Length: 231
Image (cartoon, rainbow, N blue to C red; front, side):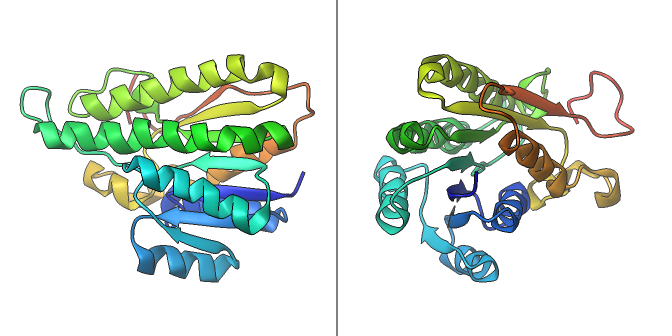
């Protein structure tokens, strides 16, 4: 299927791991992240185009897709990996932290996808949405984060229904704690966490499916966690 891919949150963690896999599979890439120096370094490593943009801004979401289209002409895989997690009990979480998580994790993902759908319809492409195991289980201390990821799962299923006749497929990846900077607060040793490359391998598997199959959601549990753990 190699063609072109657009990866938000592509400067580190899961997004960068998926981008590396896509590069190895032969895709031409656009990587997106908020900090110019980080996204330019990642893009240089992979021979990709770099866009510094903040997906919490609607105009930026449109610009991301427009610049990718101008450079490559089409889009085969959209990876929505940009995300932010801020801990806090419901009664204590400042409104600005609640709003930021909604803006990046849900609104930004929605708007980038909305802008990309015409291109994905042309290619009968894939949408890869980074959700979380926190969107499938109670998440005390991460209530807003978990709520945004539950919404991403619901949005992914709706996208599959709406775009079924167009041949566009979407998957929500729902990993437990992954060895990324975002998970450092957990206190779990990095060697005990899921590898970012594990998420990339799930995406690789999806790209190798026949055109008559799709996987709407994958939960990736951490070995050693108890059943029912948020992770």
